[in-house]
Amino acid sequence: MPRLMELNRYIRDVPDFPKPGILFKDITPLLRDAGALRDCIDQLAARLDGKRIDAIAGIESRGFLFAATLAVRLGVGLVPLRKPNKLPYRRVREEYALEYGHDALEMHEDAVQKGQRVVLVDDLLATGGTMSAGRRLVERMGGEVAACLFVIELTFLGGRAKLAGVPVESLLRY
Ligand code: AMP
Image 1 (tube, rainbow, N blue to C red):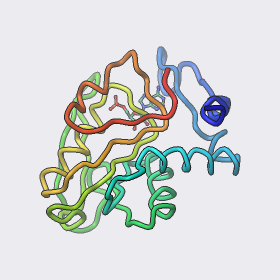
Image 2: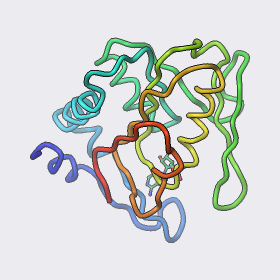
Image 3: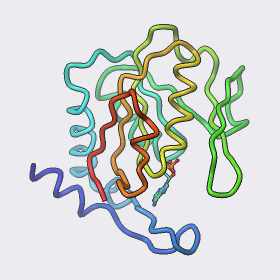
């Protein structure tokens, strides 16, 4: 798969960002290259071949970039899953643990209808906490998670195990 190997070249490693010890996977070189971005969206779309999909849910904030582009490509709507207190209307919340403390994601209560098949999208899978919270939001409102899609997966953190029971797809693994 030569296309996948090429995408690799558009991910920049930034050591010690946002804090010491973290090797940040910077996707901005991929975003600014029209061909690489199109390839990336094509590759994400290909992972959904043959699935019935009603909506794409993107995780704030880098997940939005891929989710919105993919939604347009597939001809389905976009559901934003946001950090607390950003969404204006009535919302549901799911918390998740961080290394120190916790964070949460919120979704509008009418964003997903019962029985809808939803694909969740984020830029990167690390420990899986963020995506598990997204999954719980969709399932709480009666949606069915058709897949969790990532551009990058940090396999050594084992986040995939936290998403057991739903299909997990990633384009680049480290
Ligand atoms: P987690 O909940 O541990 O799976 O973390 C995933 C979320 O944190 C995603 O929204 C990523 O954008 C972000 N993230 C975690 N680790 C990294 C990393 N090394 N480089 C870039 N983003 C990261």
